[in-house]
Image 1 (tube, rainbow, N blue to C red):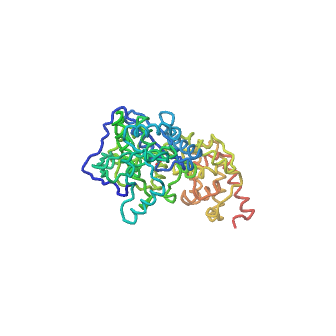
Image 2 (image 1 turned 180 degrees about the horizontal axis):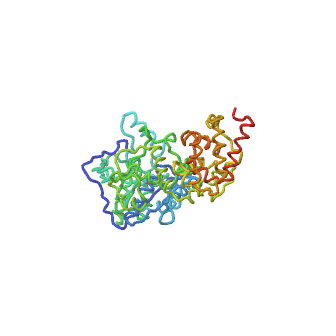
Image 3 (image 1 turned 90 degrees about the horizontal axis):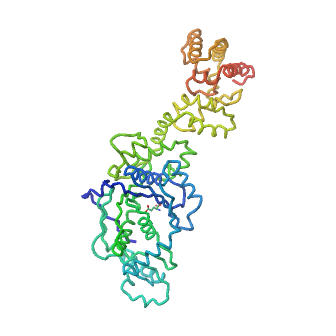
Length: 495
Ligand code: GLU
């Protein structure tokens, strides 16, 4: 590998987005772990770019690392993409299954003199590296078999290497990074086919992108160095048979944590499934947040999918690393929770409550949703807020709430209960009138009545609006819970 990184300059505008309708993008995860948040953003950008141009978005599973690629990871990646609505437009391509095709291209390059057999042994190469290290020279293959007669190798094992240009420079007009240049002398003759006949990653990627008709490669900027090597293969194949156009590259900056350090699990670099299952996020919130993480259009923060498709372009992708901020994501999620359909939210929340051993009344849960979701940032918040609805009597009173249960509170609870008892209409208005009357009678503010009432009905100091709570519980349950409070005193539980 060349050790000098590419030099970027901003004197070029880079490739633009005037891409036309034949756009083909792809997302090419290596299935060695879950779909992490950075991968999800890469997939989203590719998907949006293809949709924006009326093109195609394809998936390729880069499963050539047989030791590290697992079925579970493949399933987790597809699951995460599906959840975010980022399915491919065609059946996914599995890279390992295409090894024969990759080898075919290596042999084509060999036959046409764009590649050569290298018989250098591992020991020889180690010695070469040691020499270079000692001389403080960059460590690269020195091309020792480039011009030798392969007959000299006899029947010894060999690898096939690309005959990379030695002079000049390779330029990429990256749609995000701008004009990036590498001196060709820095690019050594990389291996295309190993001595066991298996293709290298670099070859596989290029052949697959070509065969899949990929026009735009949008990926993390950790792949920028690879692009120069990949271009070498593309250029050689184009010289041989034509029809190997250079793709437009867009290398997007990686995501960092809020503290500027590389994103780690501590920052929220978890699998996308954890955002759903552990954090209770909605997919549209995660997608919107990821979109804004590294791409912008004016100051639009919340964008529908349709709006995102309409606006997405590579010019709007920033050049500096974005900072992942879980608080912003939570706020975004809160926004989408409030917009979300109540039946959909109820269906997400019900299993969480059932898992806590509660028997859920789906209709009640759905009718409670408008008030529950008001203050919720996550699906878990809603589940937490909804628990009181299904908690069997006598409901437990938590420690902070217990403190509020003094004699005055019990008197107020009793006074409200008496007023509720005679109500014939269980409406929000009737409930509110009754509570206000109790407050007036006692010569105190509404809040002073609401708080003991809340404790008696929910066991907690926070809940949806008190009139909502009373209304949702219904008359019988409300009266029963309020009456439980008298036993509560009698049993001396409030001491
Ligand atoms: N499989 C590579 C990765 O997961 C992506 C390769 C590419 O996009 O060219 O990082």
